[in-house]
Amino acid sequence: MYTDYPIPELFTDLYELNMLHAYLAHDMSEIAVFDLYVRSMPPERNYLVAAGLEDVLDYLQNLAFSDTSLEILASLGFPTDFLDSLTTFRFTGDVDAVAEGTPVFEGESILRIEAPLPQAQFIETYLINQTHLQTALASKSARVVEAAQGRSIFDFGARRAHGIDAANKAARATYLVGFAGTSNVLAAHRYGIPAAGTMAHSYIQATGDELTAFRNFAAVSPESVLLVDTYDTLQGVQNVITLAAELGDEFQISGIRLDSGDLVKLASEARTLLDRAGLTEVSIIASGGLDEHDIVRLIDASAPIDAFGVGTDIVTSADAPTLDAVYKLASYRGDDRIKLSPHKSTLPGRKQIWRIYEGPIAHHDVIGLADEVVVGLPLLMPAMRAGHRVSPSPLLEDLRTTSAELRQRLPAALRSLTPTTSRYPVTRTPALESALADATQRAANSSLS
Image (cartoon, rainbow, N blue to C red; front, side, top):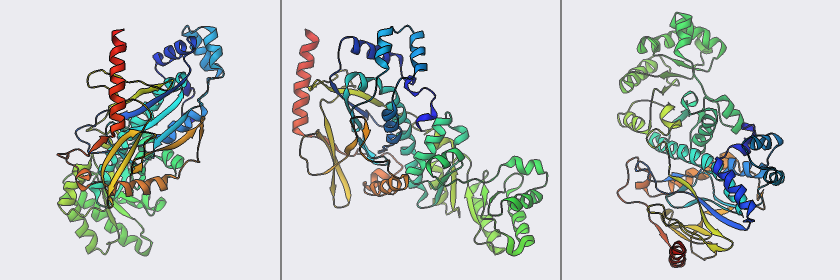
C-alpha cells in the first residue's frame, strides 16, 4: 500500500513543510495531541463508517525523507540546515483509533495522534486524505448493503472512480461493509477480495451475432454471466436458453445481467422464461447506474433480481461526495488548546469516546477526557506506540464481520435510508465541559494580550 506513491513523504501541503521548518527552527518539539474527526455529517447520512486506518498506520511506520525528496525540497528553496534535519525525521508517536468498520458520528475522533509537534503536524494532509476518502465510501456503501437486504452487491466502479488510488480504496471500503466482490483485479489481489466480472456489450457487437457470442464466451468462461440487453433483452434471454439446450449437461452459465430498460418488467419476464426452460439456477444480476434508492425500488416492486452491480454513484459517493473531515490540535506541552472560530470551535485535551448500549442496541455516545472512567465501550483503542503498530494488521474478513455486527446494533432509524428526524445522541462528560470552559477563558484572554 505504501509503495503506491513513489515519494509518499511529499504528498503534503506546502504549508505543512513551512510549519515544520518553523517548529524545528524555534525548538517547538514537545508532545502535541491532534484529533481527526468529521465536524458535521451530510444531511444524507445518519451515521458514518470509519475506514482508512490501515493506510494511515502503514504510512506512519514507513515515513522518511529520501534523497530524491530532499532534492525536490531544496529546489523549492528550503535551506540546507532544515533539509539536513529531515534526514533523520521519523514518526515516533502514538496513535489511538476507532477500528475500521465502526459506526461513528460527527465530532467523534476517528484518530487521536500524540507525537512531537513537528511530526504530528506534518502528517495532517495524508491522514485526512486517506481517512476522508475511505470513510466517505464505506459510509455510502453501507447504505447500499442495507438496501439490498441480503442480496449480493458487486463493486463495478473502477472506471468511474477519481483515480487509481480511489478505485482501489473503494473496492476495499465496499468489501469492508459487506459487498460480495469487485471487478477491480488489482484491488481483488491486493486485499484478498473476490474478483467478479461479466462481459461488455462490445464483445457481442464485435462478434456480430449474439448467440455466437454467447457460445464463444461460454467456451472459454463456462460459468460466466452473460449480458443480454445489447439488442433485445428478452431475445437475449432466449439465446441463453438456446445455448443451454445446445450444451445440455455441459451448460454451466451462472447468470444473466440486465443493464438497461425497465428492470422490474424485464427481470420478471426473464425469470419466467428461464424457469420455463428449467434454468431455475441461472441468477439475474442488475446493473446500470444503480444506487441504494434504485435497489430499494426494485426490491419493493418484487423484481426477481438476485444480485446488483453498482459503480459510479458508489465510488464517488455521489449524494455526499465530501465529508467535513478536519485534523485539530487539542493539546501541546500538556496544556489544553482550542479554537474558537464560529462554527469551527474545537474540544480540548486527550479525549475518549464511549458507546453506551441498552441491551444489544446503541443508545448514545459520550465524549470525555481520556483518563475518565465511564461505563461503556471505549472506541479509541491503541493502534501505534512509539511509531510502531501494537499488533499485526487485522484480517479484512474479521473487520467486515465486526462492522456488520456493529451496524446491526444501531437503532433501526439510523439504518434507514431516509434522514432521521433526531440525530443519534452524543454527549460530553462534566469534566470535558469544565476543561472546555477553562480553555475557552484562557484562549479569550490570550487573544487580548
